[in-house]
Amino acid sequence: MRSTMMDVPLSLNHLLDRAGHIFGGGTIVSRLPDKTLRRHSYAEYHRRTRALAAALASLGLKKGERVATLCWNHHAHLEAYFGIPAAGGVMHTLNLRLAPAEIGWIAADAKDRFLIVDDILLPLYRQFAELHRFERVIVFPFSGAPVPEGFDDYEQLLADADADGFVYPPHDENDPVAMCYTSGTTGRPKGVAYSHRSTILHTLVGCLADFWGLKGTDVLMPVTPMFHANCWGVPYAAVMMGVKLVFPGPHLHPDDLLDLMQQEPPTLSLGVPTIWLGLIQAYERSLAEQPGRWKMPQGMRSLVGGAAVPESLIRAFDRHGVWLLQGWGMTETSPLATVSYPRAELGAVSADERYRRAAMAGVPVPLVDVRIRADDGSDAPLDGKTMGEIQVRGPFITGSYHEVPVSDDKFTRDGWLRTGDVATMDELAFVRITDRTKDLIKSGGEWISSVDLENALMAHPAVAEAAVIAIPDEKWSERPLACVAFKPGQAADAAALSAHLLEHSFAKWQLPDRYEIIDAVPRTSTGKFWKLKLRERFPK
Ligand code: ADP
Image 1: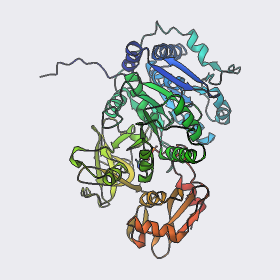
Image 2 (image 1 turned 180 degrees about the vertical axis):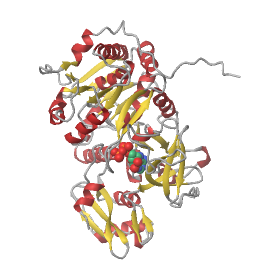
Image 3 (image 1 turned 90 degrees about the horizontal axis):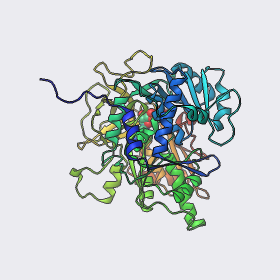
Image 4 (image 1 turned 90 degrees about the vertical axis):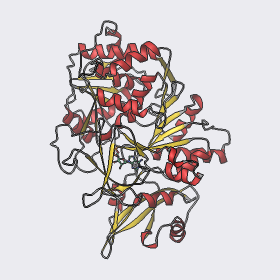
């Protein structure tokens, strides 16, 4: 027999119309370059987004063609998230923190036809304009200044477009809607293309109560850049639910974020651990130096991922009334693949156990299969100890890269994505990421987790940041070197740091052979610790 259900394709257009028709009174707040706040209702957002789609269609955008964005987090970027797919196009978010040559290479590789760019980012655009010719460059007048000659004016295009008369072109649910490039830390960056279907399924899963738990009454502050893995997919969920959004614009300094959190207190936020590390340090300093300057929004939850989340960071925020919810994923996984949340089987666990679990990557989300493959190709036992490569499969996991032949180093023959992350899984399906394959320290046939050492070091009261890398060693093949940045006015010597690690149940042979004092750990384009730079600085 056949199912009797209607054959209606999953579609972002449905979410967009829902926002306009059902949640028209909802609010989207954007912080402008001059730090003032601009507000739009979801009704305005709906009309403007449809106007963008109509404008792109009248410029001749055809199905499947790419429109790049080079933008900070704000309402117009959110308009691109839905307006480009509504016109049948594919939104390609360019990472504005990459080197200009790399941005140009990526735009050329994706064959981006049009570009939407913030006016304040035009100097960056000019640095790679030679490398790829966009047919139209549409400038969003974010700063309020007139759009320079020779470019299309985003606001003018919207004003001239026929939003009311626009009809969505028909599409299949597997048609692409968005595209992101992987960071390319190993080899050239590679494109991942998401579909209506993958995006909607990911959105629905993410919204479940144990994960983002997004509610209509939430106030959401996305600090994760909208060019980083679609801002983890959260903007799609916000539009689906008509949730109040607070976009920080280009102001991501901890002081600016704390100021914004006073003006528009969020209930839910998201960002990589380094953002929260900086924020808690600024906040705790303010308690001593300027008490009362800032209040932490009590009961706020924050989604944290993209890199390991130190337990000490989770504890520090919890002391101030904020809960960090860890997830693991990658550009290739849409990105949410696991989340750490309290499972029923855990029962009433001790506070220590709760923090320990919260500092893990967590449990696979529905629709995502996860397995840990040991070196010999067997499945690692679920003992929380045996390490192996984490491999994933599912309807929002990429099965290939844009115009790159499928290769054995990225996909298994039986159709799983090889993540390049090393992990353990325990009997409750909690995944613990021990390292990226390339960061793992192989010492005398044993593996030492750089992540475990870093997290323990960052729990030392004098340590602001720590990154551990492998250095070559004649006898042991590799040994750990710890790079440590202290909090202002504080310090600890190697003996004290090693004693601290021994207290954290590290064995003697796992301790770093050396400590190097640095000012700060270098950051990647998505704000994570950039160990490659440290390896270059400390080759031995
Ligand atoms: P990149 O970091 O290379 O720019 P992504 O943003 O796609 O690219 O990051 C994916 C990688 O980030 C994962 O493969 C993993 O190494 C790391 N990662 C993500 N979440 C976590 C987490 N919760 N714990 C540890 N590592 C994480």
